[in-house]
Length: 171
Image (cartoon, rainbow, N blue to C red; front, side, top):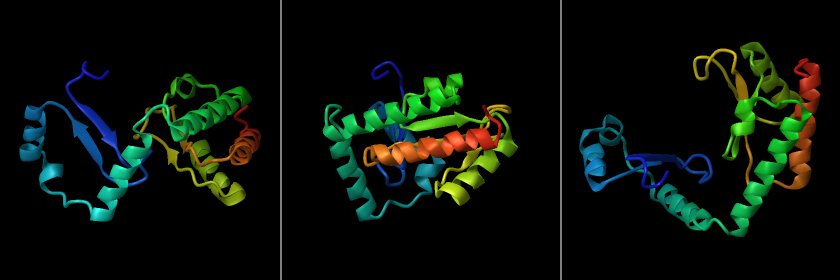
């Protein structure tokens, strides 16, 4: 979409592992945002270490052909395929094109119970995302792949979701 949209927004809290975000656009748009947007005007600046970490993260992921990016996409595709193949094959999961993989439970109680069981039984911290954050019936848990995860760790996560699917009668 680069060059086709007026505003591009990004977060530093996902792939960058820091905090904050960015809005990219024309010089006029950036000037307007700096002078008019409440969140910009009323926010303090990031500590130097946070800014430096964001810049370093950008340097590391800037090149799509880097080993880090290749490992990230290999992990995303491996985990997502495993989740879909075991029965969490909602169109939203299948359509995900980022490191954040939405696993649809379709019910707020099941999503919350799944989150609790993942944490207590498997040591996996994954928060439920329920209405009003998502439309009713599309309640979910979102997991996030990263390049540092090993195949064994990904398999451990997949086993947890498979057992969870049986326990909660998802499939």
